[in-house]
Length: 283
Image 1: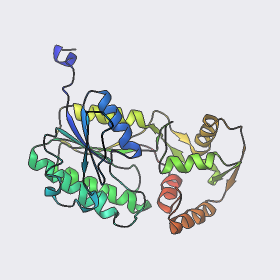
Image 2: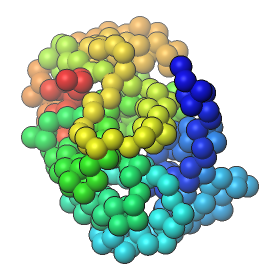
Image 3: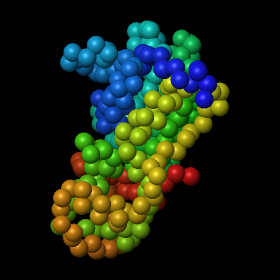
Image 4: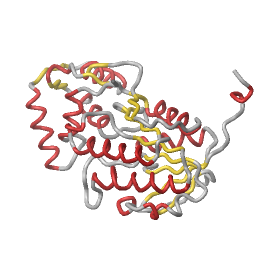
């Protein structure tokens, strides 16, 4: 190892979109732990709760579809992490804007400023499963076209002991039921990755020298598990006794997902179900 490898990483100012979210909050914590300063853009700016390393900047990302929208946000910024995203469209929050136009504008603004360190948090899945995944991958392509140095991460199911979101919330809910219903016997596979591990990967990406070969990287944990085993592990972690698991036809789960999609409530929707049923593992 060279002497240069022993040098501490210089402190960077990192702009984080979606910094209040499930994944974003873990990334912010990891950046701070590594000694970096963080600027979080949010619709309603709040006090930084005494942490001088965090700056809150008001910005409505649903309206930030042109590079100039990020003019103030990028002042003095060394790196960018885009964690912003939605699972469902609500009001002005639309997939094509928040997953496509906004990240593309942010990447163009970064390019104009000469900011090469850009990490995009995307999603592992097949675009045919729904607009959530399709719009994420379309946004990835637009970022890569503008910033060849960007790093695009597509995580599998992301979990944390502290909180949950999306697919993790769905699986926690299923695991807590007195009777576990397993579509197609629960043989679907996933590759869960800890939010803290994903956050450390993001830190490593922005601290590395930018490379001109942008491409999507699948991000998963070390183990591939079936839905049946994963629900059993969650139930054990929740401190619940073993229960009865019953296999059900997949069409029954799809009906439930359709109802969840129509109601717009709860973690279960058609896209989440299709991603889960197809399996969510790294290539």
